[in-house]
Image 1 (cartoon, rainbow over the protein chains, first blue to last red):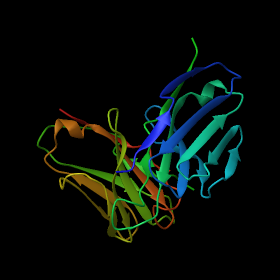
Image 2 (image 1 turned 90 degrees about the vertical axis):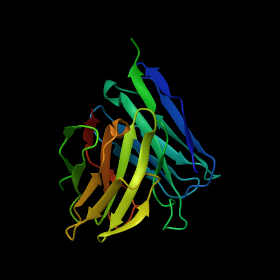
Image 3 (image 1 turned 180 degrees about the horizontal axis):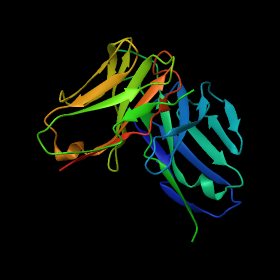
Image 4 (image 1 turned 45 degrees about the vertical axis):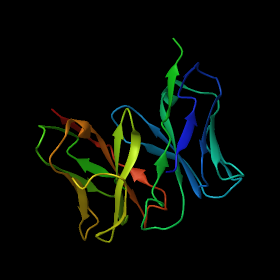
Length: 116
Length: 113
């Protein structure tokens, strides 16, 4: 089945640093979504991407839909303490809607923590 | 607009029992999807409902089932609970179908003992 590889698995940040994370897929996606999840809560949608090559910003967050449609990255500029959490990428493909395609496939997440 | 709500937030059950979880989507949203989140497997798709019909199903055993009501509210049921069913169960709603942006609820934390 479809799989998403998200990296890095975890990273430590200091306030003010820029952060990058990415996802790659073994197959093509038509949509990429980026979510952030805080402990005990559901994922919150950060950015949605619908076209190959699309670059979209949401405040200090910038995400891009890769040209090959098999990858996406998320950048966070000038990180602040509240950026701590787990970030998930999710991809979605069109296809036989009655099967497993069409639903979101999630990466394993990137855990952002504050440097001690 | 109120977000997606899920009840209960926490649940403890014993092996062999069954459980029903509830989800109320964002007002106007007609599609509801359910996901299971565990530390080992991450977020995995269970099923999607639209207009009271299941339109999409993930790779879970038949013990996992769901339904959607005419007001778009959805329930999922797990019968004959196993220890491995302990997880955070998340519901997500979207406007027309899961191809649109999905918005998640806070989840129901199920613990099976």
